[in-house]
Length: 276
Image (cartoon, rainbow, N blue to C red; front, top):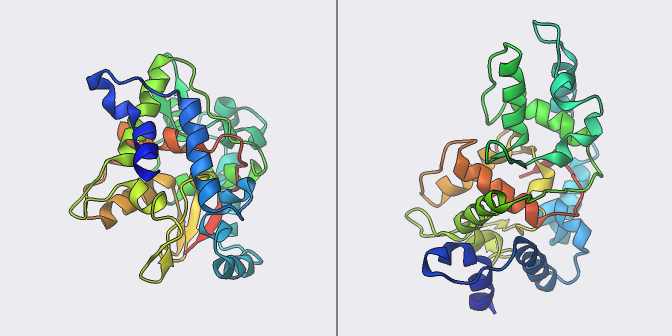
């Protein structure tokens, strides 16, 4: 099962050999089915809660934390930033529209003119630069606060990532290939831990399932003591296997986000969230 499933999902990596590819939608369905079969007692729509969807003890601790969410200050700071006009008198709404509840669910998206994936954080900084403001650092601080506010306002909205053309499918395939590629001195892929190892323990921590992973970002991690972006977490995972992560908002990580977000289509936005 493991071998056959891996072959189906990494078909993008076999292009050079002329292999027939599964469609992104077929890959998405196979990806979701893998986790639903692995954790049959977890409702599909609950995978947005990460490890707390598969472990009762962890969930109980998390629910206690959620009574006084540690990301609330980030949401408030993000709202203040969102509502502060730029020096030229314009604001973020001139780039994203007036309905903040609809913003988060649109990203990541594929820009068909630029032929690349645009994430929410990239769009925020491009909005700033278009209005004469300096870009924000990618991993934490104001960029994570703005993203936290937009995620909070977008809670309950479905993830709806589209693959509009062949260029977008190539980006999806590249992200998928990176997900299954072994990295670092430990020779481990994202899938090693968060697919085939999901539910198992590494020391005292339970490995979370990848299905729905992107829905909860940005996240407040107890380890960080602050809110951070998805690309901060992706880079940290690669470093933990003693690899060299691509830069935040690099094409590689944007494509990986695109793949992961697409596989969670139909699940609800649930950010920001709290994690260990």
